[in-house]
Image (cartoon, rainbow, N blue to C red; front, side):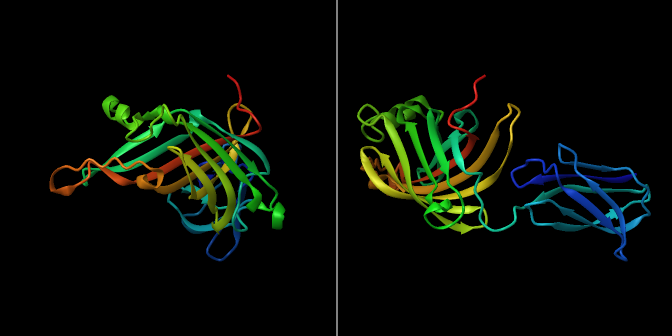
Length: 278
């Protein structure tokens, strides 16, 4: 009997300090409890069958209200309650953050033969993020920056022959241009937890302005005593913008490999100037 559930952030972190209040249909409070360190809610109290209102609150998060039905057994399940951060756009706490390649992914998707997609990823990369204070002006989040470097030769599409071709002068030309780099030049809010990152991408010996659509997924502790932040970013690149003009045409005039690449970044960053060892 009682109430069961869990409280999480959008990216799955437990909200340890969440408070859960339950009221009956008259508005009278029948239960008030807190989430445990794992974000779990367990309250073993006798509840009369019927509908109730469950309100979940936590400092720094927007409150969430929902209806729960207590069964004849006297138990109600609210499932997973997801709390969103309060107060508009957010970024992690100020300071240096190091990209963790072991828990991040740098991928790209290209159309193949006009009917399907080829998925690739780079397996060797690193980066540093600097989050500035959010006091506004030159010292606001807009002054935050990111610098990243990718080993061009680490491209992996799951096909050795295709990877060899992608590393050749027809595409990445990794012997001449071993590194792909990105350095941000600015940051613009684009909505709650969303930003547009402005920056310069150096690819295949060409430097161009490239914007990333960035979503901040949240921050939380890791099992090694550190603090991690999660991000997802996407953008589209055109091969011809970076002097990669290889364009084998098969029957009916269809290009073997599409000219547009969709870049997908799933990033975990660890607070501090360096990654934990071990």
